[in-house]
Length: 115
Length: 111
Image (tube, rainbow over the protein chains, first blue to last red):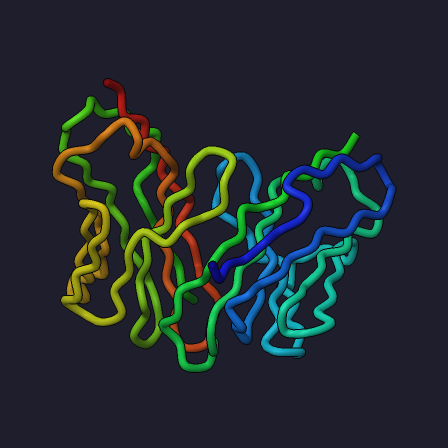
């Protein structure tokens, strides 16, 4: 089945130790998103890629970076995780954002623990 | 800017009770409206959507009608089940913007 896949589902890292979360999709969607979600709050958009164009939200800390080497894959890098970065990280995809109205498809999330 | 306001939770209902979760929005242009559901430990799943005024989205017994005059998209279900216990998010997209979410409403259904 076409889907959005996130690996790993659970990640434990140490304070200050860089960590990378990965997302892949078989939907061939143009747009990929990374969200941070804490304690069943609303997901907070960190950034999104429209094809290779990177769009950073104004309040996303510099500690968070992203890479999209091809249509199918997108990575979230946290350069120096702090205790406040412990959260669920959700990847999502959608079709052509410019045409509007398209729903986003979410992966199952990666739960990050920082020790 | 675009925003979504949904009723505060948690909401606790007995099985077979009627459910309403209110959602109102502010948006420029003509937004598309969505309800997403999140079960414990999982990602968000699209529950239903409506892309223009007076459209009704429906899925798994849930319904919501896009009301432009009241800028609302309330979620309803006639008879909830224990398996409906989850967090529900109202969301919108307008033009070329990513989804804007409400804060979520936690629903607990007890047998």
